[in-house]
Image (cartoon, rainbow, N blue to C red; front, side, top):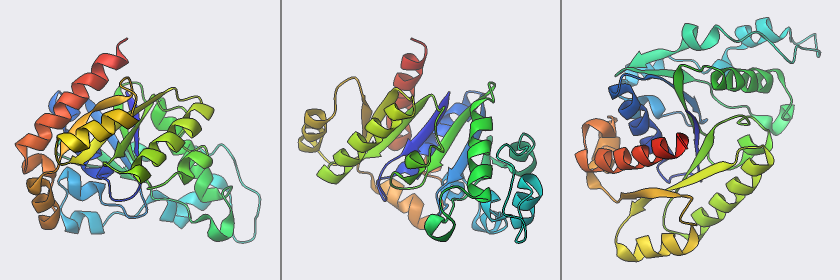
Length: 257
């Protein structure tokens, strides 16, 4: 299972991705998560301490590594498009609660454009993760659609778009589905988060096709408390974990068809 979790900012992508990862780890699966968000906080949601997180340098910020693998430098504008990255996940990933975390970071394309050594490394690592047949791989993507435009996540088994009850989230889902299909990813599913009541549920059902909707995660103060403490929501809210477990079971059932 290779899953890219995406959606607009603030909808709860990281909470869902981290809890899903820990559920798979509890089953004895080999789980590798990759944080591809510039505001990287997947580690805290998995249960790492702030001190441990502070010691992690995103792969795209490892200038020496990027130059070594791509052959790029300040004096050399030519670089390899297929650098060797197979050792990077095992060498640089950190483990907590049975889940491996690889902080990839993102690429600032404002000055360098979308084709740069850092982007080449990022795309190659993600492509390599797709080929790790024994692992469940979960990508916590940056907010928005830029990663889709760059083609960074092509080859994933499925996208899970985390939305909240609102028109802007629905619009993001539709854009993700269109772009994912262009990349050849046919399975685009939806998780509705921060759902307050039946009115919210009815709104979501009226906007999302039944075959795309995986389920609901209801508004939960315990998840907010976990975030305030910098702790894993998995350890704070049985209700949220049970709701995400039901969603996971639905994902597993669909993947076996």
